[in-house]
Amino acid sequence: MSLDQDEFRSVLGRFASGVTVVTVADKRGRDYGITVTAFSSLSLEPPLVLVCIDHNASIRPALADASHFVVNILAAHQEAIARRFSEPEAEQRFEGVGFIRGQNGAAILEDVLASLECRLVQSVVGGDHTIFMGEVEAASVRQDSPLLYYRGGYSQLDR
Ligand SMILES: Cc1cc2nc3c(=O)[nH]c(=O)nc-3n(C[C@H](O)[C@H](O)[C@H](O)COP(=O)(O)O)c2cc1C
Image (cartoon, rainbow, N blue to C red):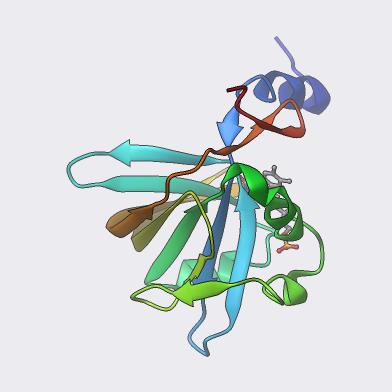
C-alpha cells in the first residue's frame, strides 16, 4: 500500500492530542521554544517522556547540545501561545511572554496546565525528526483544562 503525504497527514490528524511548547536555553542563555504535539509518556520507572523534533527546527541544535529541556503543556486559553511558538519569527517568540526558569535554565511558561523539567537522556533519529527522551526531574500542575489539537485545528474539551 502506498500512502501519499496528504493522506498520511489526514490520517494522523484523527489522533487528538494536547499541545506543548518545548523550551531550552543554550549555553549562552539564549531561549528557544517550539510548539510540539509529538509528545508522549515513555516510562514510569524511571519517569521518561519523549518529544519528536523536526531536523529543520531552529531549536534542534540547542536541544541536541542541552543537558535539560522543559515540556510546557498548554492550557485551553493558550492557543495564542501555541501559534506564536509555531510561527516563523523564532527570534521574537519569548517577547512579552511571562516565564520563569527551571532548575537548569529552560523556560517554564506562565499559566501552563503543567510543566515537566527533563534531563536529556537519549536521542534517536527517526526519518526527518529526532526523538529526544528526557527523565523528568521536576514537574508542576495547575487546575485548568487543556488546549487540544485535532484535524489541523485547535480545540477544547466540551464540558
Ligand atoms: C499544532 C502544531 C504542532 C506541531 N508539532 C510539532 C512537533 O511535534 N514537532 C516538530 O518538530 N514541529 C512541530 N510543529 C511545527 C513547529 O512548531 C514549527 O514548525 C516550528 O516552530 C518552526 O520552527 P522554527 O523554530 O525553525 O521556525 C508543530 C506545529 C503546530 C502548529
